[in-house]
Image (cartoon, rainbow, N blue to C red; front, side, top):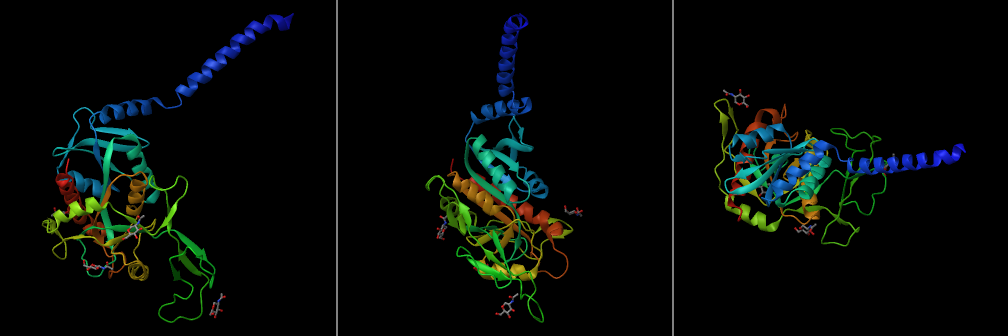
Length: 338
Ligand SMILES: *[C@@H]1O[C@H](CO)[C@@H](O)[C@H](O)[C@H]1NC(C)=O
Ligand SMILES: *[C@@H]1O[C@H](CO)[C@@H](O)[C@H](O)[C@H]1NC(C)=O
Ligand SMILES: *[C@@H]1O[C@H](CO)[C@@H](O)[C@H](O)[C@H]1NC(C)=O
Ligand SMILES: *[C@@H]1O[C@H](CO)[C@@H](O)[C@H](O)[C@H]1NC(C)=O
């Protein structure tokens, strides 16, 4: 009797539960995100946009100091996943600017997010870097042709056998300078190429690559900037040691390592023939290429990555290096064909 009476009541409870569940599914996206995604749809009606990505606040400050960015009148920015996407124009070109944060994870996820969300025609990544080429000067701005991810290591035992994928190695075990007295236990590091997935390759079948290449047609366009005038001084008290220049077509490296060490700097320069070190470029390039988008990287040299005597100059000369880098980036946007 009791059970019979309860049956219709139970049915109502089940219906309510199902409705609640469906409702919860719809609401799984937080309201603030739904609002942002709605703005994204609005903004995309006016695309395509060139994606601009810097890394950290001094680079962002330099970008805004060029006064080239005109914010969108209705949607100056959209916040998503803790990041701020700024929508606007540089001259007649629509752009979306963001600052991704330090390191390869931030660089790759931010790039992927930008490409997934917005109607993007290509990515221009810019910022500062450490100089590993003794023929270049602090303040020079580079537009490299390719980047290696030099942070994927097989860390082995002393005298350990390198893996067949390893393209280079560093014997830390006998790296005792000056007097090598036997071996220490830190062993050796084998450098392994990164796995690269791309739309042009077989699905789920990554290629092992050492070099991620920036887009050749954009590098070709960048050649028009050669000889561009750069600032030697930021103000009356902050000047570069020599007249800066734009250098196109060399190689850079990326790893989740802030490098301020002469021995490792020399190892990287000799082993990989790289002229700069940074913590994001290879990740931005690889992510853009994986998705089939053009990409270029502009990096100004703010310091000697440990090759200097005394303090690293990133804090002192970073602002002027960042300013010249931002100027080159803005000029590159301007000369790109529509
Ligand atoms: C590594 O090899 C060197 C030279 O072959 C040898 O002298 C040394 O004892 C080895 N070290 C270890 C930890 O196996
Ligand atoms: C990048 O360019 C080099 C030639 O400079 C080429 O050997 C390499 O395969 C290219 N990398 C990719 C991923 O296409
Ligand atoms: C020059 O710029 C640097 C870096 O922004 C700043 O620390 C310094 O105070 C400035 N000097 C003058 C004289 O404005
Ligand atoms: C270092 O820079 C000079 C000057 O641009 C260049 O000629 C040279 O090839 C660079 N070194 C390497 C290893 O790329």
